[in-house]
Length: 301
Figure (cartoon, rainbow, N blue to C red):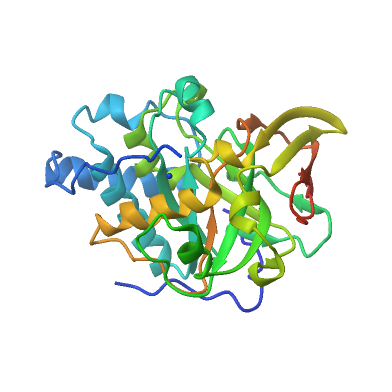
């Protein structure tokens, strides 16, 4: 993967819900044999070093559970950290219920964001290489930067108290399986399908009034070469991006081997629209209504 510059003042992660999404499944012992788990971890490392399409992990490891996927992703994460990658936040995926039937994935999941995968737009158009990504797709999102570990709650005021700023973001997700035919365990194993993250101009939470009420009504328009492709609203994301954050806190509480959220992390909360394929030579843009968040412009190289 190509490296991106790391913006100033971004802290690394320390080592170690409307309708509510239930996180009842406990952490269980792996259903995979040690040899199968090691094989999957090696394959993940190889796929991210030399991207290509392969049959779905869940087809070849029929006992693969979402928890097994997270464990495999942790081994990919450890490999990257050993190579000098710095984790700077998390991405939450499949928080948009409107696209669940299309992909056959019916619950959210998460992955790591790194200094080498994030780019800060700083108010300017961004040129983003797609080299190293498999079947990339674009997702307009909302992201937060934490100023404290958020509590395990769905109380909006308590969640907002842990957030320093909010920004519009674009995530480029990827999939190593043909036709994006996946199950939730494929997603958890493949670091939440994270590829790249572009972060727009931050706005301090203290400068925004009635933010909790305005987030569900936030509107985004996604355009390609000036032509509208899709629209979405904040309520698509588990009823509010704040509840996406609440989901992440909840699921991490059930994953004792995963780092818990910390001050300084950037959290991208999931796409407000469908995810759309992108290719080199294309120009995409976003615009927003309902909050004073700047849109983004990206040219893919």
